[in-house]
Each structure stands twice: as structure tokens, then as C-alpha cells.
Length: 285
Length: 287
View 1 (tube, helix red, strand yellow):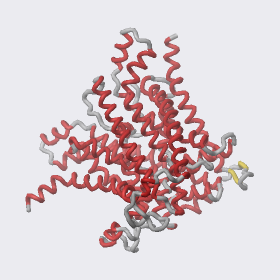
View 2 (cartoon, helix red, strand yellow):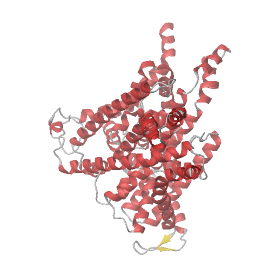
View 3 (cartoon, one colour):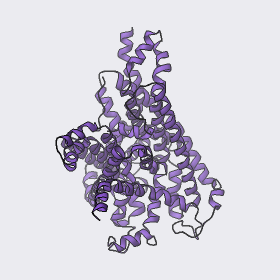
């Protein structure tokens, strides 16, 4: 009796969640794939392995597609460069300020995403003093900051920065400081002990952080909508417009699936390359 | 001169960190200041003059109020459902070895690795083709629970992994039934994790725009209201309500931290660990 119960209990515990995720995540994705191979007019779509949706979508929107990957890649890179020093300070140097700093990192989450982005619209507008400073530094050759690719990348960097900081902080915080001291005892310089001890040990955090930043950034369309111009539209904008404005469901579904597949491939390659199972859970003991 | 150069070198990391914190907080400051603005036209983009008017009138716009109410109701329900379901899943994944465990882990990770726009589009495809759901509050709730579950599992799991099972065994040795052990020992000990997970779910839900934008039908949530208003000028009251939500969340976080400290003092589950804020504990679980 108890043995049977013990065998069954994990499935009972998993049941409700699994059903929910299968019905409202996996099945919808399957539906979307099916929809992406249909042709005809809305309301009268027919499933006929219409692969042309894919080639049409890609040839029409390849600019936005490549732009999304470039913008997201740059935003991830900037976020990494910005996040690491802060994560390092919080983990090793903050002392009793640690919780205050952690609070500052997650504080942006407490204001709505859209309002934050609209606040950047204010900050980067032509009348703003920030724009004057950027112009004086020669960072705004066109005379504007808003409605440029730079503004979109800056917005993406800002909005996903906490996703970069927190995992890096978490992995730095777990480092046994004895190891760093040992490196120093063995006559390594501060730079050497950082490059050969601290940095490799924080790699899982960096991997997780880059993924958590890149994935949402690549599919985002809010930043391009509010901070960019018609020349800075990303693939998310296209999918959104095709679905919600033009009701061209097959094309939108094809693009969504390509985006997801592209991200999956990149993530798997990256995880393989970085040699980390950062996104997979720990094993049971 | 050499001294100040040395000082700068030693503190370079901290200075950069300080600038990053400033960068993180600037938009919040802007939202706060512009909640006191008295804009000349419809657009609240340039500073005109100081007024308390919009704080006094915070709940004076019926459309905004109903959007906010819809968001709170939606986030509350989505949090409740996803926290219960997710906690059960986390228990199964940490405590049992069983066939299909890797698949279950994969099923939980994948939604977090899927761009929101794809999830939103896929769900809309499903709702359009299945035809048993009418787009609105119902479909929003389904969607919100779906994307919250994974995050709840990850946060609660991290709490369960550090759990000392001997405490439960002691309770059983003292004659507690499995249910009593769960209610009196396990649940109070993982409560901070569950609370952190619930807070994260609530924050994700109340802030969600993309997935809601696809699946809302004519229902308007707080982010959808802002998006709609952005075209014709966002009322200053939106800033006020954003700040009220901000301060409310800060207070809740303070309570959560206090509760976690208390729980850790009460037992000494992980004496070697300092208590940190509830949400970072969750984020660290994602690594």
C-alpha cells in the first residue's frame, strides 16, 4: 500500500501543473505550427502543408529578424558589461549595504514595464537634458536620441538588466572566499586571481544571465514601439501587427515558430559551448 | 595625486556599481517626479509645474480604476492557482526519483525560454481554433497561470533543495502522520519560499503586457490601459498609481524579508546562510 502510494505520489503532485502546461503551452504551440502551414482567407483557412508561408515570411521580414537578433545581442552584451561590476560589489564589497543594493536592483520590477519604457521616452526626448549631454559627447550624430536604434538597444538593456545582475550575483555569492585567498597566498595578483578563480566560478551565473536577457529581448516589441522609429521595428512588432492588426495568422504563426526555433538553437548551442546546464534543474537526492 | 589615483583604482568597481544603481533608479525617479507634473496638454512628457492635483485625484478616472481592479483580481487569482500548482510540482521534482522526471523538468524550463510574443501568439491560435473559450478574463487567467507556474516551481524548488529532511523524520518518529508532518513542519519551513514565489507570480502577472495583449479580447488590464492611452496621451494619474503600486510592493517585500528572518531564527535550517530578500532568493534559483 505505502509502496504504491510512494510510487504514485510524484505523479499526483505533478498532475495539475503538467496538465495545465500541456494544455495551455504545448498544445497551443502545436496548433500554431499547424496554423503556420495553412493557407486561404481568415475564417476559411485550410491545412495543406503550405510551406510557402515560411519562405514568404522570411523573405519579407528578414531585415526585422536579423535586426532583432543584433539588437538583442548588443543589449545582452551591454547588460553583461554593466551588470558584472554591480553584482561583484554586492557579493563581495557591500557588507551591510547588500540588501539595500539588491533592493535597488529589483526596484524597477515594482513599476510597470510599460511605464518604465515610457519614462525612458521622456528621458531621451529631444527636450531632455540627457539628450543634450549625449549630443555633447557626440553620441547622437543625427541630433536625436529617441527614435533611433541606439534608444531601442538602451531600452532593452535597461529593461532586462536585473535578469543579468541577479544570476551573476547568485553565482558570485556562492564562491568560497577561501579559494580567492588561496590564489593570493600562491602569489597571484588581484587580476590573475579574478581571471583564473572568480570569473570561471561565476560562469554559470553569466550563462544564465545572458540567456535570461537575450531571450526576452529578442522577442520584445515594446521598446521598439516606444523608443524606435519605423526603421527600428523588430520581429516582435511584425508578429504582433500580423496577428492583431492584419489578421494574417498563418504568416504570423510561421514567423513565431521561426523565432522560437532560432532562439532554441542558439540557446542549445550556447549551453553546449558554455558547458553549463544552467537552465536545467538540479537532480533529486 | 598618487594617493587619489590609488584610491580611485581601489574603488573603481564600487564607483561603477554606484553608477549602475543610479541608472537603475533614474526611470523610477522620473515616474515619481512626473506624477507631480501639471502638463499643459495631453502629453505628460515635459515638466510644466508642480501640483498635488493628480495624487488627490488618483482614483478619479473610472476607466483606469476598472483596469486596475481587473489587473489586481487577475493577478490575485493567477498567483493563488499557480502557487498551489507550482509548489506541488516542486515537491515532486525535489523529493522523488521517478520515470519522466527529466521530461517534467524540461516542460517547466521551456516556457521560461520562450519569448512572450510566441507564447501569446500560440495561445491566441489555440483559443481561436478551439472555439470553446471566449477571449476575455477567462483566457487571461489561463495564460497568466501558465506563465507563472514555471517561476513558482523554480523558486520553491530552491527552498526545498536546502531542506534538512531529518527534521521531518524526527516529527515522524514522534508519531506525526504524513499530513501532520507536512502541515506542522514542512510547510512553515518552506513558507518563505512559497511566499517569495507568490510575490514573483503576482509581480509577473500584474506587469504582463505582451501575452495579455494577444489574449484579452475586450478586457482591459492596467498595462493594456496604459498601452491604449499612450496613443492619445497618458493621464498623470497613471504615474500616481504606478507609484502607489511601487510603495505597496516595497512594503510587502519588507514584510517578506522580516518573515523570512523570523522563520530562519525559529529553526536553524540553514544557519550558514544569511537571509536575503525573498525575490533574489528566487532569482538565484534560476541559475
